Image: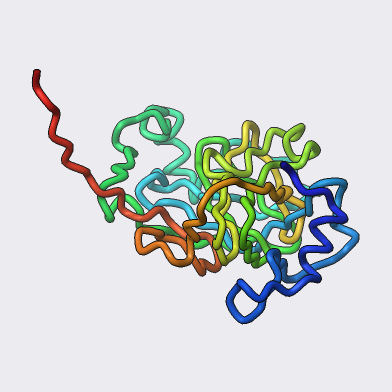
Length: 239
């Protein structure tokens, strides 16, 4: 059952003796009551992005500082004319479908990152690159199931704010990492409303994320790269 906005606010203002340090079930910081909706709270985009270094073609910029008075072209994606010429002659070297840019989820070297700061004037994101962003808000959730989704206005600009991992966990504490992808070259701004957080009640014995030794991301701050995915050896039973 999903919590309404007033119920989210009530839970935020009600200490729970069963939680660490008598914390309430929901904590959101910073908090602005004007961002509370009917059954969700608006989240904002932090000013730091990361991309996987291996996925950026040589001579190509990961993003472009936005100037509303400038007319842009494909040349603006490149560091110099020579790399733009390479792109025109061999576009496959810049195609994200090229296996030379592959990500191996089980290899740490695939997850080396480049940091990008979003200026106040805005940043143009490329449809060819996946970005790791983060929420301004730090949240803690206990005894509830939190999850995030995009705002309708964000979706109608074809900005995907979480590629797959929009679901949180009971006991998760930290900023939310966003897996951002755009359909067109799109401007983003620091502190823009990027999504919404919802809360649902659940049934069953608790297994809090912050007490689970297998959890990777509790307490994360800023955009956090993927943890190396272990390869589990599963023996198949033969009849």
